[in-house]
Image (cartoon, rainbow, N blue to C red; front, side, top):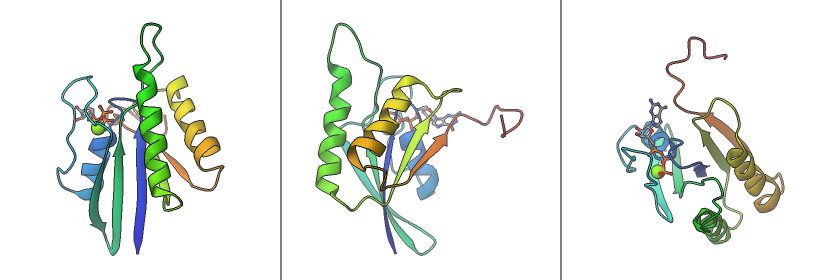
Length: 138
Ligand SMILES: Nc1nc2c(ncn2[C@@H]2O[C@H](COP(=O)(O)OP(=O)(O)OP(=O)(O)O)[C@@H](O)[C@H]2O)c(=O)[nH]1
Ligand SMILES: [Mg+2]
């Protein structure tokens, strides 16, 4: 079985780290600071049990700025990726390292769920940076 997974989220949310966790090896470059690290997108192939996973690591989204349009670039990249994959996306992982669902993460959700896939592709929310929580239910 083959599974195509697109991994999205804010810059620094832990998208590349999630790929390394799933693949159980350091395939994707993880940023050492808050600067954006993954460019257009990168495809990684690995196996989880008997499933061949194609994971698409995407450019991080960020909040809008008054003095630049650079926050729009990830939207264009995401659009191009989804166009090139057409109907072959099985699952989206939406990563967040924030305590609450912020505006950027909500916008990413609506971009993929409403605009790209019209509710036809499951979107799983992945909460990263949770290891300091006293209780995982918080
Ligand atoms: N403590 C902790 N650190 C994490 C976790 N996930 C990612 N990180 C760290 O957070 C930083 C950013 O992680 P990345 O995986 O590079 O984030 P990204 O979403 O790929 O970032 P961009 O590619 O820049 O958009 C790195 O220093 C990671 O090691 C987590 O669950 N816990
Ligand atoms: Mg990355």
